[in-house]
Length: 52
Image (cartoon, rainbow, N blue to C red; front, side, top):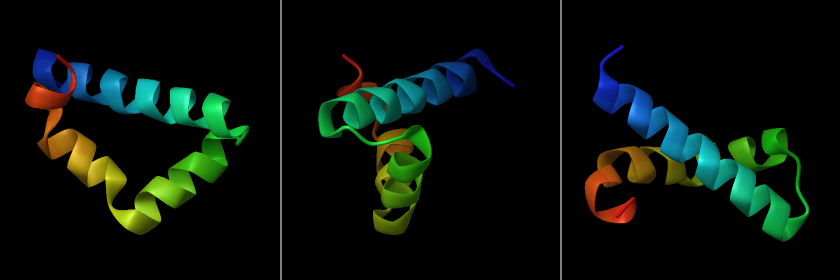
């Protein structure tokens, strides 16, 4: 796994954790929600502008 791939994975995990904490949801619930609506793909493809 390249450094960029690791950075993206950490960013997506951070977003899942933060959203879950804000909405009082488990990580699994957030992951299901994000997967259903394509949020993970969006976060991954738009990593550069979003993480800055």
